[in-house]
Each structure stands twice: as structure tokens, then as C-alpha cells.
Length: 290
Figure 1 (cartoon, rainbow, N blue to C red):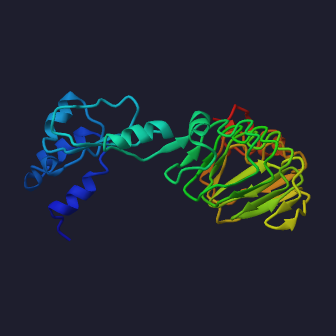
Figure 2: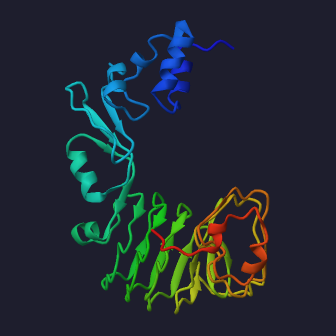
Figure 3: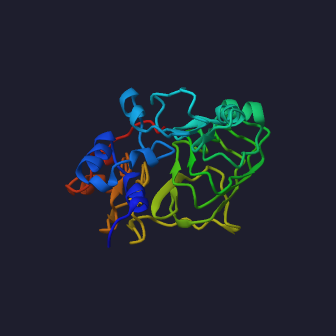
């Protein structure tokens, strides 16, 4: 198969730095001018590499510290790093696009308890001490619940957790004394200590103190002496088996490619698991979740 201009342009979108673009044009004469075909920057640019991408009209900002160019040729910016909802609204007014939007506690105090559809994550303490919150549906685009997200929401009685959630911050439901019902789209297992949800990233939350119903049924807590991780799981989330004191053994299938921070910290089989040299040492350490 012979690569044409379109195919090589698509391939070069995944280059790591400007040297790759330059080497392509030096090494293959018929692909000279590939850089000039781009109307957006596929990599962060500096003053030198900006001169090579002469036809950029949409500028992609990948990191908070990326250099920005206002040279009169750029009509729109696409921001990939995490921004709060207020920043997103400001950038939208300027005609720009934000790809990673977090709803923060400040945003919630300003715009209310309804989570906007554009939001991808809920920040640390987003609904902190929100006494007026009695129930909430988390929309599917949300992939993260921050540290203490619903801390001391004493009136919260029910919540819906979609399968898109792949990260749950420590003490997410701390002090939710009225929380009696949770709906979880991808429930994996309920133990004495924790609720395990989702795949391919297995994450867990500590069972709220007064929780009675999950998915419309009374909770049936199980002894977690032995935990069999399904082969469909590829990653263990941060603090997944955190302080599961009754866990005496756990199988780790070959499908697991990533271990979260503190995922075995304080569990009953911690000593035994430490003998497994394939498990990273940070699995047995505790750091504050962010």
C-alpha cells in the first residue's frame, strides 16, 4: 500500500515533537510541505516551530503552560487542559472550545446544583455541605467525582452513578447521613466495607453509614475473604481495596495493566501481596486523593 498525502498527514498528527515533522520532510521528498497542510497545531509550539506551521487557523492549547500566539492568523483556540466551568463560559464567549471542564465548589455556588451537560468531572468538595441537596443524577459524561465531593450533604437521600465514572475521590460521601439509596449502572460487588463498580477500570467507594438500598434492592453485604477480579478488568483504580480488612486473598489476572495508588493499602492480605514483585510499591502507600 502506498501512503498518500492524506494518510501521512493523519499519521503525523500523532508525532511527539517538531523533530519528527522535520525528519519526515527531509527523509521523504514527496512529503515535503506536510507541515504547511495543517490548519491546526497537532503538538505544542514554541516561537521556532510556530514559524513552520504557517497555515494554522485553530490553535490547540494542550497544557496550562503552553505558549500562546496572537499573531492575527489564529481565529479560534481549543483548550485541552482542565478548566473550571466559569472559565469555559468565558472562553465560549470568545468563540473558543474547552475539552476538559470541571464543575468546582465555586461554580456550584454560582450556577446551582444542576450539573451542566458540558462538564466532565466534579471537583474536590464540589457539593461540600450542600444542605439543600436531596437527590442528584450524575450525567454520563462525568468521569470523576473529586475528593469529598458530597462531603456532609446531610439531606442527600439518593444518587445515580453512571458507568462513565472511573475515579472516585476519598471520602466522597463522608457525612451523608441521610443517604439511603444509590443507583449504580455498573455494579460489580458489594462487600462489608466497600462497593466495587465499573469496568474496565475497577473502582470502589466506602459504603455510606446509613445506606440501605442499591439499585432498588436491599443491600446484601458479602464477606470479602476472597475477591476474584473479572478478566474484563484492565485497571485497578486508586484506593480500590483500601482498608478491606477482611480480604485475605485476591486474584490478579493477566488482564490488569495498571495499578492505582494505594489500591491495596490496609487490606487484610497486604503482607502477602507485597511478596508479588509485579505489584508496584505505591499500591501499599496512602496519599491524599486529588
